[in-house]
Length: 183
Image 1 (cartoon, helix red, strand yellow):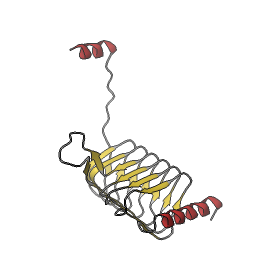
Image 2: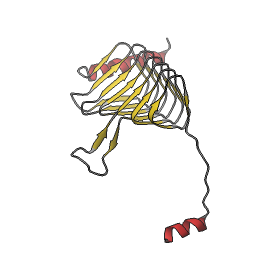
Image 3: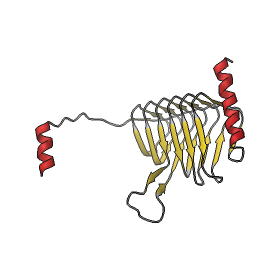
Image 4: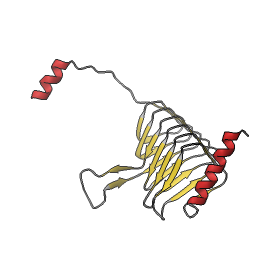
C-alpha cells in the first residue's frame, strides 16, 4: 500500500466518524479533495468494503436520501452524486471521470408543494460507466452494462448491453439563426 492510499483510507475513516450516525461502511478510500456531505439526520450512506473514490469527487445526500455504494466500486476523479431519495451502485462497478448522477429534478413548474421531483437511480453490478456521462432520475442500469462516454441516461438499460446516445452534428448559419430570432 502506498502513502496516498493510506491517506485515502484515513480520510474515509474521518468521514465515517464525522457522520457516524449516517454512514455505515467497512474500509474504503476517499482521495484528496473528495467529500461526503450529509445534510439531514434521516439521510443514509452505505459504502461497501474496498470502495475506492478518487480525487475531487462530491457526494451530497439530503432529506431522507439513501446512497449505497457496493463493495469494490471504483469512482474516478471529479464525479458528483446528488441524492435525495435513492442512488444504488452495485459491486465491482467502475465509474470514469466527470460522471454526474442525480436522483431528482428541480420542480420548475411548481406542481405540488415540493421544490424537487424525486426518483431513484439503480446501477447494477459489474457496470462500466464512461467519462462525462450524466445519469438522471428514474434510471435502472442492468448488470454488466457499459455506458458509452458522453451519454445522457434516463430510463431502463438492460443487462449485458452497450448503451450510447446517437449524436448528430448540426450546424446552423448565423443568417438562419437571425431569421429564427426575428420570427
